[in-house]
Length: 44
Ligand SMILES: [Zn+2]
Image (spheres, rainbow, N blue to C red):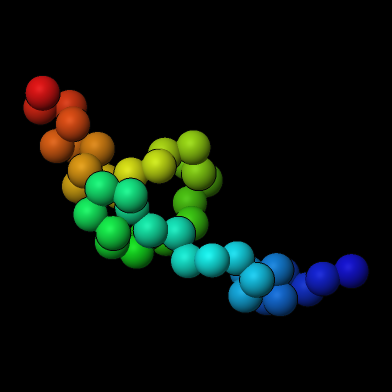
C-alpha cells in the first residue's frame, strides 16, 4: 500500500492549462483552471 506521501510524489504537478500556473490540489478537483482564469472566464 502506497503512503499518501508517495502517492502525491508520483502525481505530476497540476498546472492551469490557460496560464500554466501551478495549482494546489483541492477538493474542487473538477476545476481545470486556476481561480484567476476561472474568474476571467466569467466576465465573458
Ligand atoms: Zn490560470
